[in-house]
Length: 447
Image (cartoon, rainbow, N blue to C red; front, top):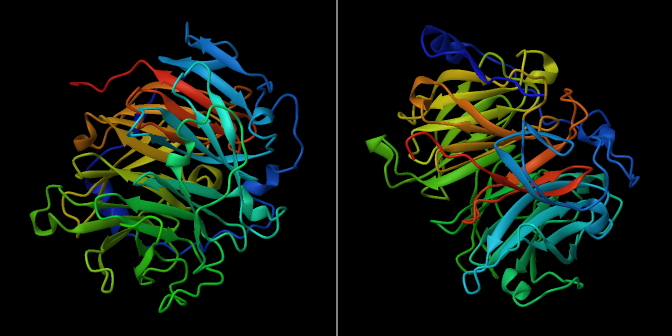
């Protein structure tokens, strides 16, 4: 079903009121069976709970807001690779991508319960599964495998997960070069300074890896008490990461984006800035000196339930945020994206809340060429135009619903997306569906 996007809170006095309010830290959610893991039954089904058969699909155009069984708008299905073809997996979580600088071939890196699947998506209509790198965690049944994250730097993949003993795997992606069929893979390295992590991030400009949510088994010198805050590694030699520092001044960090800042705040231009999603606040850090991190701002907001993840606009003037539990907790009445003005990094301002009109839970957001690509669980990939973001506004321009059965407020459907392939395809994971390769027919206004 198609819904019209609308802005439900605009800039003005309300933003100041929200920022002046106080909130109570929610604490990192316990994996007690009530969250994402509630739907994890370890059973491979011929039709996913979202109504998607475990059958490969290819070249289905979005016509009259449908692409076969999938509700859509201006986004075509290039292909679908079911979990049954990804090494027989039973659960997918995050996804990232890599383009071989020598051959120009595109690869989707899909994090699965069992490990990381490598899929050649150069032919977007006929992806080729090249095998799965197994998880290094000692217990293959550990529920922590439900949560994983992948980022890339200098032709290497860095892979984290919540599973005990996983650490961060390192894989040399150039080993995929010339491979045309499934094979077995081994890791090239592993960071073992912590037992698990929730997410990882990489600032490619500074060659820094940020490991976040690592609360157990932290042995990195000086980092035992960071409580899930960022642990930082110099990965200028990606095969041999070196600990650069850590920070626990605002407790547990759920997700983070770090950039060499080129935004409008002249006082901080040229510094390395991180915006952290810290459970109940947006927290801005100056991490230029990894041994002496400075908190620039800690911004709460009235409707927070679990500050989850967000992304800078390309001019570094604004930040889009998703709160993972506000829909479920009822602090908002629809799927909501928060628009933050970061023109003054020391004083973030909430300028708007953008609603999609449905009830699904939002998850991960990434921005490319003025478009925000949002994985919103049961309502799928939503694509917003940011051309009026200075007014606290977004405009939905397209979508593709990978969970067609409903838009319920549950942890099912799409987990993540990767929109950065030059070809224009977007890799999207469906948790109990598989890997979708989508082709939007959308450009941001004025581009």
